Image (cartoon, rainbow, N blue to C red):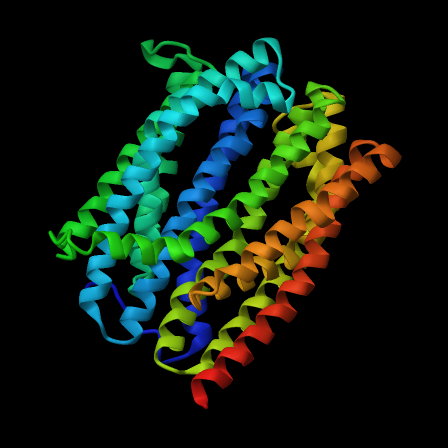
Length: 446
């Protein structure tokens, strides 16, 4: 299969940095285009910045949900490849594509009806509410196509192919960067759409991603016109996919809670959070890139019973996450005001954004540990611990801490709660994942 490589032999660190390097580049492209988008909207005005901040939890939640379905499909494909069962891998690939298209279409229809109420609940009002709703309703037009491409991306990596996912992930950002200025500012005779121009540019990017992902399925001859077993395939995908999707949803739900808490301090604070979270997401995506390499590596090596290679992969990813987290925190302590001023010099936006960037990046390495452990659980088809950890992080640790510290320290307390919850759950995730690995290893070797 073109571009594919077995992960059950050769250097573990080579495989991790090959797979994660590609994903990091792709994630950076996707987050950088969001940062460019924020820069454009900073020129448009405060209402546009606030509206995009309110929309982020919704669009991020829907993207996270469909990534969970992709993780369910990828875990089956990776283990099937490790067991040399190519036919099951091909069937799962086909059914995963079809499921992604159906699920995202239903969610897009439902979301169009609910978004206004959701943003009102989060605290958006007036023009900001109208802008956030209109932006998201346009974004929904491209969501089914984006969803298929995201599921395909994980499946392709499970075949050991590191290059093609990069093409998928960088195609949409490239299109958006080119198209967005024309639609946002009305360049060269195009209508000046402001925030809505950013939404339409994301739809254009989703179309291109979908076409590239579909070409891979056809060119690799993995499509199977066998639908008698689609029910069984969907059930197997959802066994991991639903808990993985629920786990992925915790972070955007937490962002929604944060937005709701900050809305009480005014739209400039919300806008500042939106700016800072987009900047922080650029560096956070590096740790997520390391974590995504775990599903194919753990899946294939666990299927081939190479347990020591699994432990080596996890240890390498944990070290890489902490190294990058420390580097990122230092950069933010030095340059956060400069980064924020590139987007807005409003004093309130600057103050809240800089506070966020001084505090939250401290926990990036631990957030990486959570993501690595979560992907490891899913690769083992043990999604329960990942879901429990994510729920505990939000409801047992973050929400009580955020409520308490915000009453004591204002909006800065919310940011401190974000960092503390990642640190505590990161340590717990590492310990629990090691315990599950040892338990499962003993079961398979006795």
